[in-house]
Length: 245
Image 1 (tube, rainbow, N blue to C red):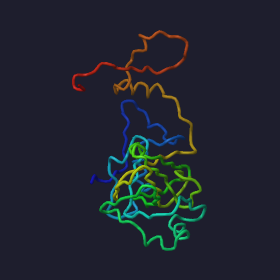
Image 2 (cartoon, helix red, strand yellow):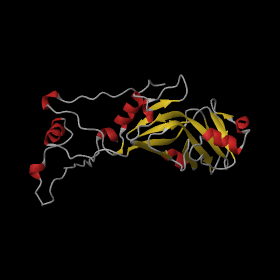
Image 3 (cartoon, helix red, strand yellow):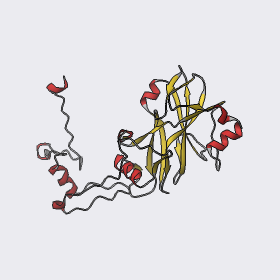
Image 4 (cartoon, one colour):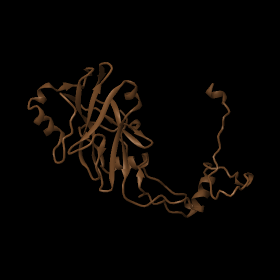
């Protein structure tokens, strides 16, 4: 298992004399911020001796993993404001824990049944950060319905600002039964900063850094000005390299 992700330290080229750009913008948080959230405990693991895998971190999301047990339920549900998921399942069936399915060595989730599974990851969001979930593309191809449930939730796949607690997933195979186990990844979570500054334009100093780093080619003098104002020069290479054959 890969080692736990730690906070990603970034540096600025001292020759440019520039400070890091302000990062508190609204919008979807990228992988760098997700790594920071892991480092400062905003994303944690609800089980001891379990670490975050490096490949869970995607460019703008984190893959969520199934926990050790699945609970069959009669129907989909939302816990409602002020009620956690476990208490709601007990309200619906006070013997729900007697029917839990151990996923540690793998188990079959039957077609047409609905299961609620605690996830390995839990979160402790700041007051200006919310989250939302969606199925992984492979989950959709297998025709498995998945929806995230949070304690106190009044809608699926949504986590409110400042939420602190465990996460659960509703799983309902629709075309055929499937085998899953602890650690299987069926959905992913994205984070959104809801308050902050609007994104700023790139400064001349940052533009120079892009040129110096080779991330931008200075071909502007070769392109005629057509009165459209500032724009970014994008290059597309359609040639097939020998290595890709």
